Image (cartoon, rainbow, N blue to C red; front, side, top):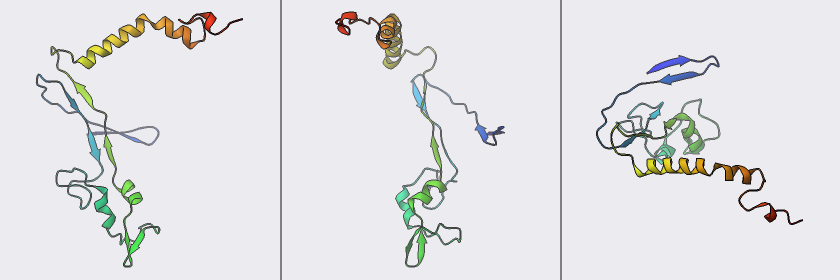
Length: 144
């Protein structure tokens, strides 16, 4: 992973990875967090997130715990708002991978067809959008 400090004070992180693609199309998705694997009540030993419901029974005994936390038997308990900011997860949009030379999927063919149809009929959209003649004709809007 590489870290770059930007002019506005923020930090940009980037990484590269390689994988071997077979002959079947697939998706990849990046996921990350600031929580290490096997953090009690937060992540399992593989680093996967656990249900937030597990955290509501966690005692908060540090002096820095927010004053608004609920108290059970004299001990503050972590609430959902604290959980939300104490462990941050991100999920990237999926990236579709189809190796060169494999047949296009139907969704790819439909995308090309939709683009072609939009280009062929683009003039109708412009006319209707701007309130000009459009394909209904001028008479439909002005019957003077």
